[in-house]
Image (cartoon, rainbow, N blue to C red):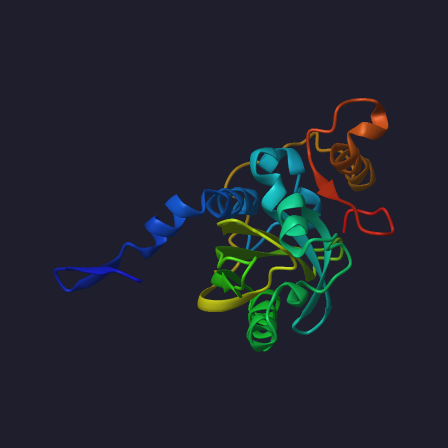
Length: 230
């Protein structure tokens, strides 16, 4: 239940603070993305280094736009796989939603990439004998691709409760879509020694894999079928 307090002539909602306390991984990914913006409308896909959110990586995902309102999962943390009872790479993100919630999600996805905007969704799952109801939150944060187009989304999904038998799918109970302000340019100097895009992408791939270099994998993300980062 949403609780609001009146302070003078202003209405102050404690819902965001409550959500942050219950779903800290969502707030963590949101804060990381906001730091990457550096005064811009949105960061680029190349700016995202999984080591920056290694503590909440199991909840994170990256989407790629295929058409207006349609995006498939390029990378996904293990929490999403656990919810679906299968690997979600390559799936449209709408596959994680109940039929009655898919059109609403498509409209949110379109707003995130076209406006552009950031979105936070409150979700609840279906339920059954071996499927207790889950409460969840999702955040959707736009990213530019290598051509400067907003075609990627950094997101996170965190569910509370016993997952039970999958797949678990969700409906949207509330949504908050916040249009992003125009680009003001970097607010602090960008590092001059940043690696070229090709080298940087290779480093990110190594960070996702870990085990390929003989070291213990410290980031647990599932690769897209073509082996790329997305």
